[in-house]
Image (tube, rainbow, N blue to C red; front, side, top):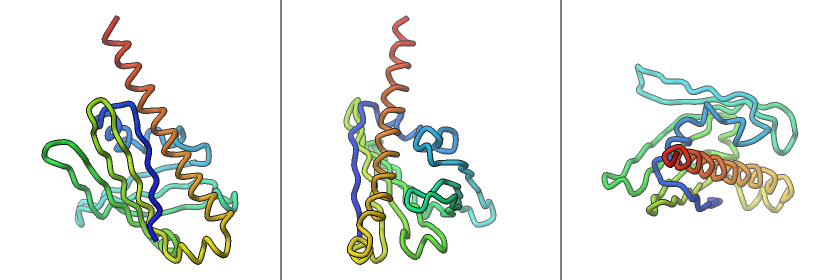
Length: 162
């Protein structure tokens, strides 16, 4: 099952993309539940991986989630960019990955996240509340990224005017 979340951001694609690429710098601004974020580059395999620790939105226990970037696409006309992530075991049993699609629309951007959930319909039936807690956590991250990008853009505009 694919869960689709989307947000329109009053900031150009370049700014939203920059903040997405620098996620390890401001991950705590995305969610108060985030505790640590580390990027790992394997130069022999040319792979980019990551792990993060966070307080689980469901159990409230600290969890460590590992993953890797499986695909990165940049449009030649610079109209859109996408990043595909795959989570590693044991979280891959349920959440096996997501794709972030960044689309430029002049001075605005659209960020769409496609969350790939294994057994999604069954999970929703068994525990809709817990399923929604995870989705709401991701929605909070999108809203916080939107606010960070928009405030970063307005700060730059103010800087240019003075």
